[in-house]
Image (tube, rainbow, N blue to C red; front, side, top):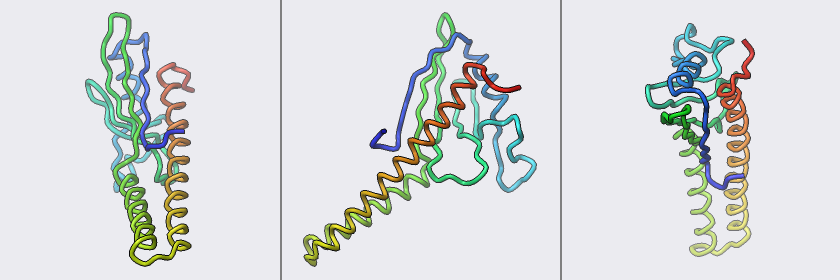
Length: 161
């Protein structure tokens, strides 16, 4: 389990860069959540953008998930296929949520330790901050595993047609 909301991996594929981008583009849609016609269809696995040298996608989910990772990928051509450099990170809104509450609870811990000595309250604030962070990292790592599994199936072409 990672201690930071970030994970990365490097994949080597026997497919060409164009083939990988083509297959990824086939199962990725840019979604406008205000327009119901652009909502996910059965053959769409990812929401996001696929460019000429990389992609910025996230797994399609049925309900909102704060800890869903943003998958950033860069693809480089080699003589026998391509290399994919993939980074998994939290969306900026979710990262702000974790940082905000961590800073608030750490501030209260410092306040109750130094300004108004009450070590019971300080321990409670510190424990809440720690629990908040541990739960966030647990759910983020769980979603990274699920997203990684879907992405690997796509690259290995084990998708159901």
